[in-house]
Length: 310
Image (tube, rainbow, N blue to C red):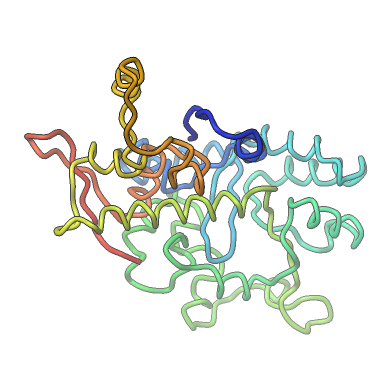
């Protein structure tokens, strides 16, 4: 995900290294589809299988989409957290083990003090409701079940056959304006007043990851938009992403001759704002969201073409 850290000032290097170390091993669902290729249905089915076995954990953020993380790494984050006491850790780990597919946790699962501690530690987001969650999830990174429109039918085929997601997700009919036969417990909270508040499962650094990747994709699209027709050779786009820095071999040869041109690597936007995020990672992320495609030019290698802007 990140390239080797180049020479830079001690403060900047410490900030970069700490950012790398503090970011868990997240990967977006779109990125997985772009890297693995093949049938979206088969990829999603495999992800759903691993999720059911407790190998992967799916995390979601309102309006920003979802990411995947290995379950053992996520549990390790919980165990190493200094903000949680042992009782809270044990309760939360038991819930994760018993509910490998769960994306939400009822407020009644833990007491108020434990819930507050998990929120402050970054493992839960503040109390919300299913109706509020469905209304606010969306945007480019939203999943098909969060959008009640025909535009999401093609994307819905990525869900594993037989899963709730394959038919639009929980409450799909209600979200579209209909009246489904959902149980009173799901519609009414304690006392029958309204939807019961719920916590959404998250992870420390989840928001930072989505913010970083979203900004990186926007920057990559802006570089591609500078081309008259919205397309260019992949090597040229890579060079622009790297800030026009020459390749390692060329830089070594110039340095051996005592020559220097251009800017230092750590002065580029790639390192100043994106902490060394690699071009290949951002390209796969943009491909996974459907904003660009890679094609063979037949003359200058692979090319990159913009499909649409958000």
